[in-house]
Amino acid sequence: MDWGYPLLTIDEYIEREEILANNEFTSENFKVWILISKKSNLSNDIEPTIFSQCETFKLKALITLSSEQIQEVIGYYIGSLFTPPQYRHKGYATKLMELLNDKLRFEYKAKFSYLYSAIGSDFYSRLGWRIFPHKEIRFKVDDGFSTSLKHSELIIAINESNLETIINKDCELIKKDLKKQNKKNMAILPTKPAFDWLFQKTKLYSKFYADINDPRQFGAMILNKKKESINENEELLERFIMWNHDFMYNQLFIIRFRSDSPYTTRLLIQQAMQEASKFQFKQIILWNPDLRLFNISEDLNVFDVEVGEKPEFLPYLSWYADDDGDVDWILIEKYSLF
Image 1: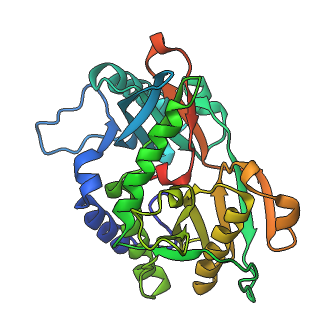
Image 2 (image 1 turned 120 degrees about the horizontal axis):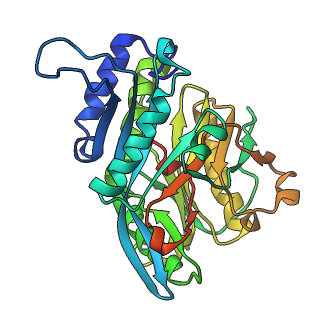
């Protein structure tokens, strides 16, 4: 499963990696790290023994400095930590993460690193990463789902033609939100290259596995009918949903979500339901929802919905700026998992 098995063959995996390597987000921000013996001679043709390895992506984030002041900083996502079976339980993964942590902090001058753990809560906590809230809300997709909520708003599909505009406006709003905070918060910025990487990976899975046309709609937004364009609808910035298709587990992941009320939330979830039904997915998942924007008791009459803690992909943050004290990581949504 670390490289896509059983969904992908080895040849398909190699093809996927070659295509993603040429993506803008990968080519500018991606690195692979390996742990080898100090005695390894990299100048000859003998391949060194790799005891453990992982990957990083460089990303931009915003932090609050004080009231009305924010700063853009650089951090790193750490993923795909892997140790070959014959070298496990010997401290190699621990050593790799310790060395990488120091390198990112002192040589690369990063403000933070983060990751999503699939191996429980103990390993990364011991190494200095702090766990953050990890709730999720799950909607079961019924085979006979149909839109039931009447509305006067205009629903617009998010696709390649307007994706960058929505992302840029979302970043502007994240900055405004952070300026209102009275405590130190950090938010990873969504970017067009990162979203392109996520969607390109999905298209490859639709080709390899589902044998269907790749998904063309990335989400939906709500406009007032009296206004006809995105630029005229500043309020739509609070009212959109973006999703990604998970063909491995037949589910739709909401990767970015903005709502201003339980009513708007229900409209947006209905759009996700329609998209999930189109691909015969079984459920829709949203990470760390603001439950104030959900009316769960009423939603139970419309959706089959469940709220609980995530069993895996637990979010961890290592904050490197000691003088700044602790920071709260907000917007822990799936757009930040690569």
